[in-house]
Length: 265
Length: 299
Ligand SMILES: Nc1ncnc2c1ncn2[C@@H]1O[C@H](COP(=O)(O)OP(=O)(O)OP(=O)(O)O)[C@@H](O)[C@H]1O
Ligand SMILES: [Mg+2]
Image 1 (cartoon, each protein chain N blue to C red):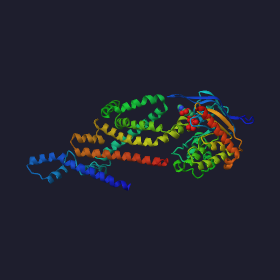
Image 2: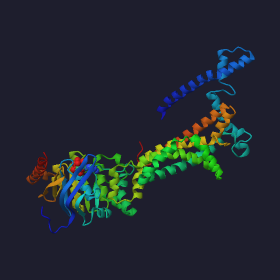
Image 3: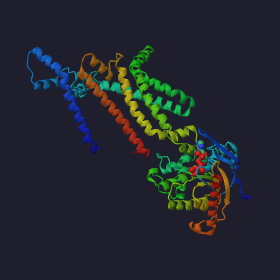
Image 4: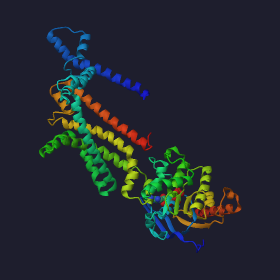
């Protein structure tokens, strides 16, 4: 868990607390969360449902406001970072606008951020190629499969120059085979773009395959129980999942999850 | 399209049959009275024939209404002394003239009502105070019978020198803004939290959110509202033309017809109004289909 002194922290959470006031009383979604994410990290968040993974990502994105502690993103408050358009956010559902074509959907952030028309077209073409959807620019979302829609929503988050990518279970609804493909693609993308990625998942193999660090969380109140540095190399073919190192890390994640649960019962 | 023709024809046939059947007992009294006065015996066949062809029937038969419609549109304009062929202007006895008077006011009122409805809906969605204060008033406004309100509006506006199209259009707007407000408030709120959060991550402004998300998402709601709104607008105009001494418009024709017991004139004006309403709603539907298809949302 040692912070490498050479790399700068991109996201830093200190003593983060978040309590939702609901009709049936307060819900402690995050409690005393400390975490540093460094530049170029691929950090996965894993934990049982309701442990605050989404909430943590949303706090980073300034979509939720902590009730205690501090977060900084690129050294700024999350609000300042959001206004500086520091990150792209991929939601659990693709959430493409049905009245826009795939190209139009990817153009949406570019229009809002005031890119020129020529640059919009150039960037749309580039990110579509990045997610292997070239040729689908003029199709409407309903003409694409769920996996393709999810790829389009990733392309949308890549279209502008944010060096942080926050992804909330982007592949949760997809089948295993499509998921494997998209995982490979995502890793390649991460290499090429050198972005810092925060990634929420329910799948242990997915977390281990993708991440440089795995954050294990436990619920009620949501907190971090373990942070695992991956010993795997950055270059990862799919069959790395059969190596002893991979299985070893996966085992540790499973133990961490079980422990978090055990403390609960 | 062709598959719906048979059911439609069936329904039309049944309606016509009921209509014809109803004409006989409704108009028979007058036929019998006439026969009694003249001292002649009538067979059933005579009674049926007479009830379907009276000059001033209580209930005109379908073919009589059709004839009257034809006579007061095409025939009046092409052959009438005051028709457009002879004078270059529409005859004030033709339903084309009166229909146009009503239609133009309807369109103006509809445009005003739609604009007002849109502005109110955008205000309600964006402003907390308006959200809580406007809707009760909008609902209250619709609970007042327009029949009671229309003459007052016309009289008050006449008193301040506003006459002609505008007072009628205001009454139409008064009726047609409401469905637009209700539909558009729902439509502008149709985007889910995730779609709104997405724009928040782009730091999009309020107007950008309105333009790029809320308005496009509300299109299906808008068109549903517009269809109700344009029909309501037509009703408003006809009501406005009824009691105010207006001399032109389908409402005025209705009133004049009932004043002089001209049932044929009443019914042909009614049908003219129905045709105008159907065309307007159909037109909105056409625009809807074209718009939604261009937005990739055609069903
Ligand atoms: N807007 C909200 N209002 C009230 N409670 C909330 C809200 N959002 C989340 N919560 C609660 O906070 C807790 C954490 O929710 P969160 O969505 O972060 O969980 P999660 O780890 O993402 O779960 P999942 O894996 O099912 O997506 C849950 O108990 C949830 O009910
Ligand atoms: Mg979640």
